[in-house]
Every structure is written in C-alpha cells, then in structure tokens.
Image (cartoon, rainbow, N blue to C red; front, side, top):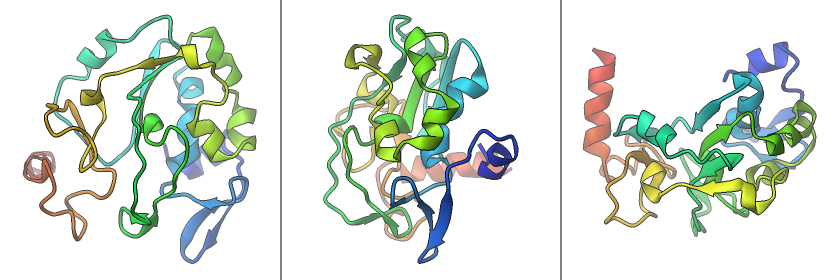
Length: 199
C-alpha cells in the first residue's frame, strides 16, 4: 500500500505532517513508524470479499501461507496472534519511537474475513477519523469477533518463546539489515532469502 496512491484515490485522508524528520499522525498526536501504520486497516475495503491478509514489511515467511488461510475461522472477523507484548525499549527499527498501546503487535499480521458482518464497522471514515491506537485495538469489533492464531504465525524476534518453530518471523525491533540486529535470531535465513530474491 503506497500512501500517496491511497490519498489520490480518496481512501486515505488522515492529516499527517513531519516532526523531527518523522511522519506524524495529527489525529493520534503520535509518530508513525511506517506509512501503513493506519492505512493497513483499509485492507478489507481494498480486497472486497473473502479472506485478506495484511503483514508488516519486516517479516520472513518460512511456510506456505495457504496453511495460514486453512486455519481461518469463518465465525471470526479477523484472526491475529494475541501477543502480550510490552517492550521496555524507547526506540526500535532504525530509531523509530517504540510506542506502547493495548494489543500491541496484534495488527502486524491480520487475516481479515472481509465478508464478516462485524467488519462493516471498519469504514473508510473510521480509518480516517479515530486515533491509530483505537484501530490497533480493533475498536470496531467485540472481543468474540477476534480469532486467535498460534504464535508461529507472528513470532516476534527477541520477545516470543524461542521454543516455537515460526512460520512467520517478525523482526519487530529491527531487520538484520539494520545496525545492532545483524546477528538476531533467523538473521542468516533472512539474508539467504534476500540473496535468492535479488538474483
């Protein structure tokens, strides 16, 4: 999702600015670590129907994603890994602010049931009007509409149980290309895949 394209199509109208060189969301009164901090919630609208997957860009997929779609529960509006992630660090990912909010990292992998009636509340207007922290806590849904995926589908480097064999590795603090994260878990595998992709 390129933010400029979404703006041009009239789908993303949230006011943003730059503060201290960082993208700033005026509604949330907070920095945005990425352009898709809030625009990710437009995925059901963009997909239209069926199941649609959103993933952060700092991930390594180690299994066929069709296996993820096979565990989707049609009674749920969205499926996520329900992390209890409370980072102590003040910064992450190339100096970005490490914000703390309810249900942190739940929205970094979201399998949306676009046809679920509860997702009718996730309107373009809502995405553009409420603080990002409300979107990230799934403010338009009742708790029973949020399905749970096993940790393997959004395994947080340095935070999740190391005994888990991850299907999706999430370099949430920083990718192996960033200083200080060159030797983190799964860094060699990430570099191997990068070389395959680049050749």
